Image 1 (cartoon, helix red, strand yellow):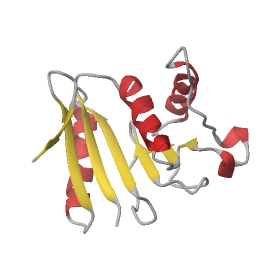
Image 2 (cartoon, rainbow, N blue to C red):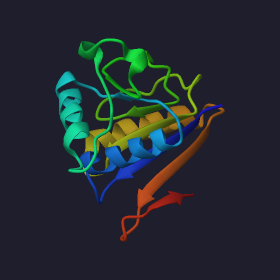
Image 3 (cartoon, one colour):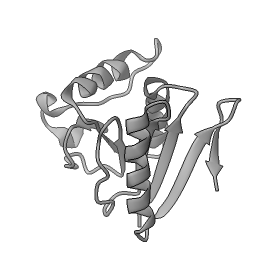
Length: 149
């Protein structure tokens, strides 16, 4: 059964948080798929993953790169899982997906965006009605992620 984690972004942006979460995913030996609500956002994430750190990058690809099975991180707009990912990241407008087949679903949302909060509340209600373990994470003043009750 997949774990579903909600990350409420308040003190850092998605661009600051996502690379770190993807690094941790790959360190576990897992593969990831990142689903966004628009092609423009995927292009921005593509650029981010090459440039977020002067000393490293996150290996990833998109449909245009071909052979998705070779990509440890795959960026997409749809709900496919072409690289047999263990973890699915849902960002900026991506709708909740069926969790079967994943170790974890990570739903990140901008706490300053009312529409994003409303969409996250609806996704939370949907997941809470399921049998999946659900966790809500929020950053402390010290920018540490803390599990909320």
